[in-house]
Every structure is written in structure tokens, then in C-alpha cells.
Image (cartoon, rainbow, N blue to C red; front, side, top):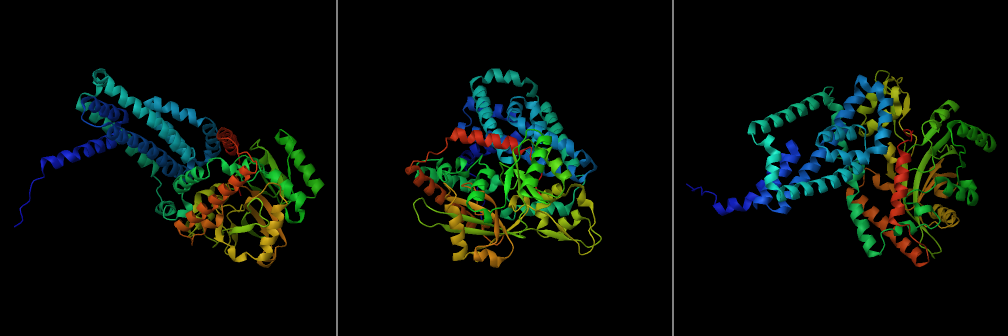
Length: 550
């Protein structure tokens, strides 16, 4: 019989720092400040190292903050949208705008006042503050807060014990823990009161399909590669010099109307006509809209969209003047009207040319497929969406767009389009369309591009009637030209592997940096980092006022 030897004392000692750190990590989920102070007292006694104490407390606090945010955003907001309370959606939308404009100082202040953290972080998740923004702010705040608490507890250990007199009795600590668990369970019970396994399965399924991953999860490898390129080419802001003829190179804050104006002057037969609305008020801009439509002979339907926009935000297909008037009242951001290019097909063509080269190339082509559901005469639109193998992954976006129409029951065989904007973030399906590339198409895109002053790399979004026309390089209409920040969106083809997507993006950013470096050598001056941050802040403030895209 094999003898079981007792664990050697030195082996236990080796694992003690790990268990201490793990204990403080999990303790932060119950009472984070008390856990941090306790770690500081052990620091004062020399019973734990600074790296172990700091890492355990910081990560525990930050993960706890993220957990509250995720709970409210995915479970709490989902429950709200399925419950009878959704009649207050307009008020919630106004709250979203208010919180988006003031969220940063509120999140920072709540870190300083322990009683405010729980409601503030839940509110941030429920009101859909962007996850990267929330994680960045709370991460930095938790970093500073943890360092200060540990330092104070280590330095003034004796005094801290007096401050913690209320926690000396184990019964009080247990009471506090019990209350925290009670309220957490009540919150979970309420959040999952109308739990729907089908909807939960769809939301869970998004995490198994990388094309639906949120930006904060998908982009870290790209961000790291960007930093490597910044070192390699000696300039983090070089992408802003990739297209000297476009503001910021097309990274942030560029005007859609400015590039469309160039295209209308140089390639009018291939550009969907557009014009910026004048006026400071909704009434003034409605008058301007009427005048432009009459002068340019633009009839319904037409497109209204923000002059500053990304990822399809705010794009609306306007079918009546009442719809246009309602749109104009939602935002004061600069808007443009554009003639609707019927298509019906749409593609994204990513093009690049090095300065000094005689000819450019097509890097990637995206085929855009506009999803739709077909009625059975019995099910509501919402039910059909949740049952669709792919639409269910974008259900929240579709249902938000449809509003009260989601409860309609389409007739058997009736088709209901789910999206009009050719953008993946809005629910459009992307496929690799390089089969459409021909010498004739590449020559046409190259000819158009060389006529746009200071343009070297970016993506055309265009609509066309047939594949034959596109391959021949004729009968298409450009609806947008996006600069250096544009993606080769064919990466979102569900048939691609995650590594294939990263490989394409790495190659794309390598081209952006190389072209920016060459333009810098020729005299172009990259935008400063601070200016870029200001432009991004200005755009973000405008974007929260944009209505849901079609």
C-alpha cells in the first residue's frame, strides 16, 4: 500500500502568498475598501508583498466594477426592454444622453464615495455607457484608489484600526456580508424575473462568434500591433498623414461632405449627389432641405445622415417629410442629404496607393447582404428575429430600430427588411467579395482615386445594380469615402477565422503607417495626439444625439 506523505511545511509556506492574495481578491467582491485596508495592514506587518497586495486588490475591485456594469447592461436592460416598463423608453433615451455627456466625472466621483458606486455602476451599464470608456475610467480610478488605500493603511496602520472599529466584531462583518448577498440576490431575482432561455442563448452565442465581439474584446491585439508600428515607423500619429487631403487623414472628425464634394466635382457620374443642410434650428434646416431637394430634383426616398459619423451611426432612409422633420428635431449635429442610390446591391472597396506610384490597388472587397425575415402569418416580427439563426445575435439592434413594429405579425410570405445601412455594426451581413475584382474595376477605382486630392488609402462604399456592371467598372454610385480609419470589412465574413481577420487588419495598418511615413517624408505633418483626442471628444458628444440608424 502506498504511503501518503504529509505536505511539507516549506511547500505550504511557498503557497501562502498566493492564498493571501486570492483571499483579498475575492474579499473585494464583498467589501472592497475593507479588503484593501486589510491588505494594507498586512503590508505594515510585513506579511504580504506590495505586488501581491496591489494586484489582488486592484483586479478584484476592477472586476467587481465590470461585473456590476455587465449585470445591468445585459441582464437589467434586457429585462427592461421585455417588460411593461419599456413604455418609458423615451425617458431612458434622454437619460442615456445626459449620462453620456456627464459620465466621466460622475464615475470618478463615485469612486471617492463608496455608497455611490453600486447605483452609479449599475446606471452606467443600464444606460449603455460604452464599455471601453467605462473600463478605462473605472480602471484608472481603481488603480489610483487601490494605491492610496494601501499606502495609507500601511503608513498609518494603528490609526486605521481605530477607523475600522465598526468592523472588529466578526458579527458585524458577517452582517454586512449577509446584507450585501441579500441585496445582490434580490437584484438578480428581479433582473431574471422574465428570464427567456432562447434570448439568453442568443446573447451567449454572440460570444462564440467572434464577428459579434465588442470592440473592447476584439481590438486589443490590433492596438498592440498599432503600438509596434508606431515604434517601427517612429510616429504614433502617422496614420493622420496617410491622406493629407482629408482632415486627420480620415482617423477622426473628417467631413463626409468634404470628400463627397471632391468626388462630385471629379467623378460626378459615379457619385451619389449630396449637400450639407444649412440653418441652426430644426425649422431652418427643414427649409434648407426642401430647397436642396427642389434645386437638385431629389425626391423621396432619400438619405439623411450626420456629416461626422462612424460605423453607420445615424443613417436614415427618409420616405416622407414628416419623417425628415422628426429626424431634424433629434440632433443639432451637421447633417447632409443624399440622393438614394437604389442599387440594390452594395459593396465596400478598400483601395491603396503609395505616394509617387503610378497606379494603386484594390486591397479588399466586401459584399454586403441586407438581412430580412419572412412572415408565417402567426409570429410577431420579434419572434421571427429571435428564431432566425443569425438575426438573433443582433436582435437588440433590430428591435430597437423597429420600435413598436416588432409586435406586428407579417402575413405568410411577407418579407421584412431588418437594416438599410450597409454597416456590420448596424446588422448588415458582410462577405468576402474579391471575386468581383477585375482589371476593369481596379482601373476605374484607381482613376477615381487619383482625382481626389491627397487621397491614398481608404474604403469606398458604393451601390450597384448588377455584378456584371461592377466587374466592368460601370453603373455604380459611391455613397461614402472613408479614410485611414476605415476597415477592410470583408474580415467580418463568418467563414473567416479570427487569425485571418487579424492578419488582414495587421497588413492594412502596416500600409496605413507606411503611406503615412512616406507622406511625412514628403512634407505632410501628422496631427498631434492632443488634437486627435479633442476631435474624438467632440465627435463622441455629437454621436450620442444621433437617432438609431436604419
